[in-house]
Length: 167
Image 1: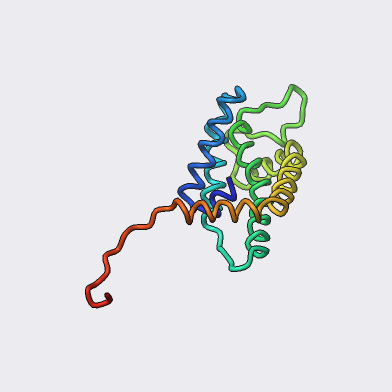
Image 2: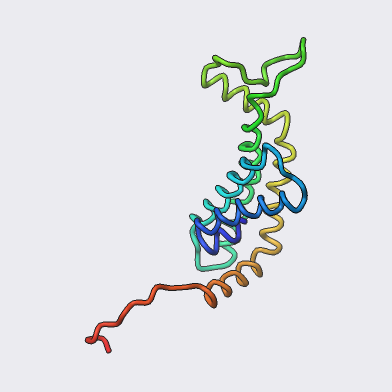
């Protein structure tokens, strides 16, 4: 998703992210109330990848994309937790300092969510971030060259008429 967004731009990156997750859910049976949130988060990942700069050297481009992948590895999990966090409830007698409650001030809500995220999914998201970096550095160069070649060969550029004076 990140590489497609980085090569083809924000619009195609959003479409790739959202539709990849949708198709994957149909194939694997992962359809549930979380699916729209996964589609949005993945779409945003692809869209923002389209906003990345494209330096002249491949190593700089890969470094930027790898850092971007690390950030999104953490951000994806943090965004996905928000869809269910307000609905989680502690058991009786449990410490409620991780959970959302109506009427909380904004700063307390952010502190509680940060604690909830650190306790529940930061470890998994750190592994996702590391995996993104490793995959981009290992396979990003050939895949980017392949996608660039595909875009150059099959892409469409609007036709512009030449002036008679330039002929």
